[in-house]
Length: 203
Image 1 (cartoon, rainbow, N blue to C red):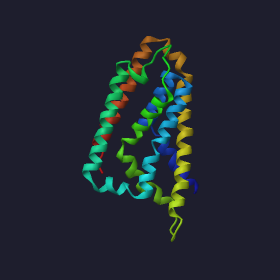
Image 2: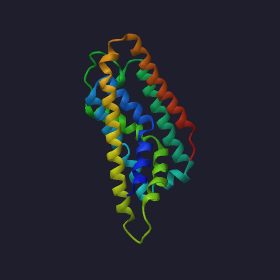
Image 3: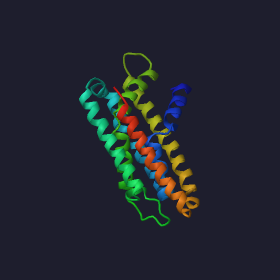
């Protein structure tokens, strides 16, 4: 594992996407604990994609338009649902000064689904990981597992930082109704934009 892998991974992880948006929203709406839990959930959501890439299941999504399309549009529908609940101040992303507690399980489940219902991630890891595995007669699977573990650790660290920064700004936001309204619109619009981006992706 060289600096190229670490740098590439950090760029990929830090680039705003569905996981980043959800972690920011969780930290802003529920505080530091929720932001960290969301980061953990998004990290867990990477596991199925990593496993698919390592075992070769990603080839199915790469070659089957039906499988890719089904998973993709499930992801689109879920992102639109998150946009609706955010805009309507319902569910786990309602921004309130005294937000009711939400179970860690519910936060993790939402975060996992956000990443899980994105077939592009599986195809991406299918192409990404092998580039950093040296040729040889054996050990490739172990090397990919090690790289995956590093990628997940970086994912959690970066996302937890996003959640902590959002949580730090929470008290300044919740006391301003107009800001709250715009925050809801921004998050809802972000989920809609990300759903449109996912809908337009191809194999």
